[in-house]
Amino acid sequence: MRIAAARVFVSDLGRSAPWYERVLGAQPSASSPDDGYAVFDAGCDLVVEEVGDDSDIPAAQLVGRFTGISFAVDDVAATCRTLRDAGVDVVGEPETQSWGGVLATVADPDGNAVQLVQYP
Image (tube, rainbow, N blue to C red; front, side, top):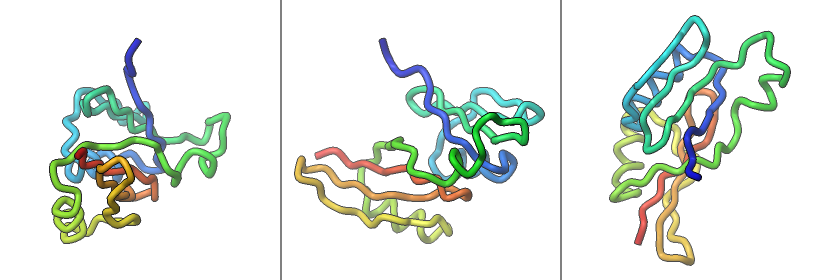
């Protein structure tokens, strides 16, 4: 088995999908704005999905949380500086981990947190 897709729930696809492309460099591979989703190639499919009014789970439980998704970068500190200069919310500064890597956390327009990881 392998991970086929990861999903991030958002309140406004028109605002969030461009963020994932511009900020994280994820390349779009499919989208259906009328159906409320966009798919990006990010090593596996990254599905950015708008939570509709007909959702069985309230948006407050799905949007604006830690996603558990990490994006590998060569230099976390430099990437954070570049992203901050571009207006991205860096919510967790680069921090060296006990295993030798460096992690930082950024938030998308809805406050969904994704991590940047620099492997040792």
